[in-house]
Image (cartoon, rainbow, N blue to C red; front, top):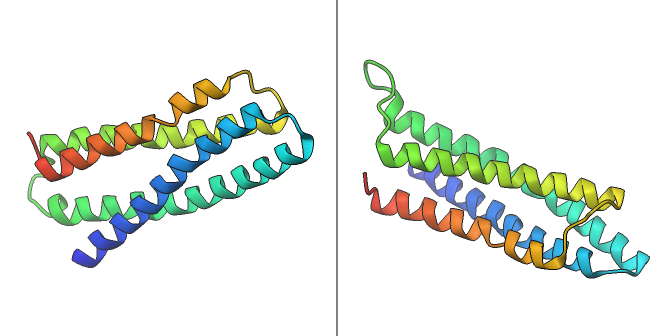
Length: 143
């Protein structure tokens, strides 16, 4: 179980590195007007989004495996503690944020972005807050 937990943490950290960086690329895309620079930033964003998605899949799968190993073998079904319910809600929000990043990338690719660089600077803060809340729930287990 410790090997699975260690791999889960590595994949989560790697996935979140991408979630922290992709909106920074969007900040620059929202500011950039030179076509060559925009194409380079779009290429970076596409590659990063694809890589982030490949990291998210094992991160979520390993997390579900850990949850099943810890709480799934009990009679009467899974008895998931309250803090884990809250964490699962936050993980769903992280997955929604990941999807939103993909939707924003498509808008940049089509040239229909209407958001300013300021929006993307604020948008970039969401995964930090989500990660903070998830780590606090996992470590402190407040309920």
